[in-house]
Length: 220
Image (cartoon, rainbow, N blue to C red; front, side, top):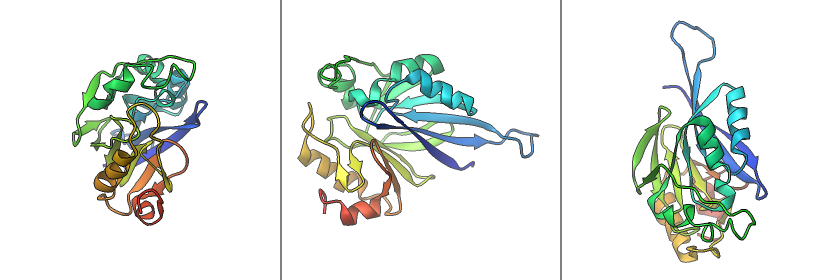
């Protein structure tokens, strides 16, 4: 299996991390020539057309879009990217309350009311294979009621959205947020992963599960 790689674009007024996860597939008979790259985009924060054009220019084909949660700064580019790439959009089932409500997802407060309806709602613990890559859906309510993380075991990394940050956690003062729930989600759902698991959050720099278990002041 080809190595799974992850790239990042920082987009929008909240400096949100939009990730693209891909692997390069060798094309038969092409020797050392570059293979076909198929990608999953996580949280297209804004400028969906720009995301698509940038990836396409680098030989990366978008095959699916995942949302970690439905806040405005993670979804503003979804419809444009979905239309440009002609792919499906996925989110956790409980996040319907935010994806489809501009009050709950705070987009109306941000001055650009926006809703989106995923093509498929996912379940906690569900395993999927998209763009040739296997991953697990981990429900982590707290930042929002339907926040989730995506764990790629073969690659050894977790895309954590706004649940777990480097030495911090997501805010819980917006609709459906709960501090007790987010701490419980992190301790019970994320800290059981291997310590060396790399964590890619929705804002800021990456970290590891082991580092957060030792140094995150919200969970120690």
